Image 1: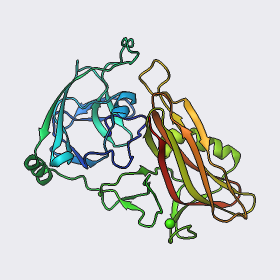
Image 2 (image 1 turned 180 degrees about the horizontal axis):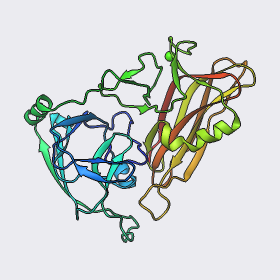
Image 3 (image 1 turned 60 degrees about the horizontal axis):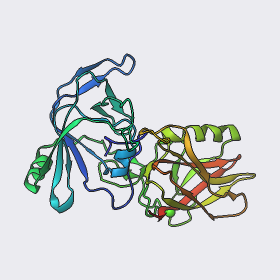
Image 4 (image 1 turned 30 degrees about the vertical axis):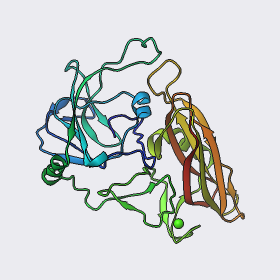
Length: 324
Ligand SMILES: [Ca+2]
C-alpha cells in the first residue's frame, strides 16, 4: 500500500498482497501548490486506486509514514472476502500535507518525527488509528458506489518478479497487477528482437557518464521493490548487446535505514550488477545475487547498456534464495 514506502517503493512480491483495491472517503482532502507548498481543502466523494499490499517489514522500515487525516481509508478484498477500513487521527493538525510521488496520493500527512529511539533501538512513530473489518456486503457496496478514477486506457510497462517475458505488455493501468513498474523513459518495449516469444525491452546505449546518471537516478526513475531483512536474493535475465563495443547488464542498489534509525537513507547499503552480455555473444543469461541489510530496505533496479549500440533484455526473474 502506498501509505508506507521508501522513495515510492511498493511491495510487488508474489503472494504478499492481501487486497486488490483501495478506497477513501472524503474526510479531508487537499490540493497542493507544488511551488509554494500551500494546501487547501478540496471537496470530493469517493475515489479508488489500485495498489498492492504492505508488509510488516515495509511498515517497520518505511520512510516517513504518511497518514491521511480523518475520513476512512479502506482496502477492498483480503482474506475470506473481508476487507479492512482504517481511520486516522493525527496527534495535532499542524502537519504539512505531503504528496506521494508513486500514487499521486495527495491527502496524507506526516506524523511527528521521534526525537529518540525506544529502548529496543527502534524509532517509533505514533498516531492514532481505528480499524474496522469490512464484510463482503460492505465491500460490494463500496465497489458499486465508488467512482473509479478513469485511467483513459493508459498502459504501463512492468516487471512481474515471478517471471516476466513481456509478451502481454504493456499492461492496462486499470487492471490490478503485481510487479515493478517502469517509469524510466529510456526503456521501451520492442519486437525487434526477443529471447522468448516476440517481445523484449530495449535501451539505446549510453556512455560512461550516462551510466553514472542512471545510477544516480535509480531511486527516482527505476522499478523498485521492498526487500526483507537479512535475505539473499537472486536475479536472472537474458541480455543481448547489439552493435560494436556494446555491453548490456542489470544494476541494482539498495537503500535501507542505517543502524539506530527508523528511516531509510538514500545512501546505498549495497550496489550490485550482473555480468555483461557483450557484442557478438548473442543472447546471454546474466545473473547476480545479493543480501539485503539487517533491517531490510528498498531495492532499485536499472537496466544498463553502455556503448554505441543497443541492448535487449528478456525473461526476467527475481526471487528470495534464503529467508531467515
Ligand atoms: Ca519475450
